Amino acid sequence: MTVDMLPKILLEIVVRDSEENLLISTIIESARTGKIGDGKIFVIPVEKSIRIRTGEIEI
Image (tube, rainbow, N blue to C red; front, side, top):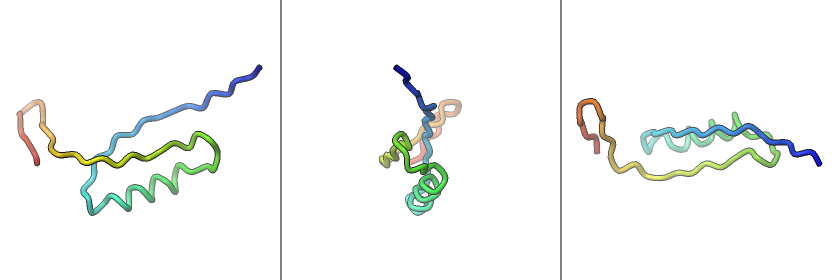
């Protein structure tokens, strides 16, 4: 029995709402092979970010 494992990569990218569709289409155009294992894109909101070093909060 032969099992071919595909290498995986996880990208976590934060962009402005206005750049969301451009990023999604760019990833799809670059990553799509048409074969099983191309992956998925999950779009979730980022409510705020905190810079650990300074404690700066961006909402």
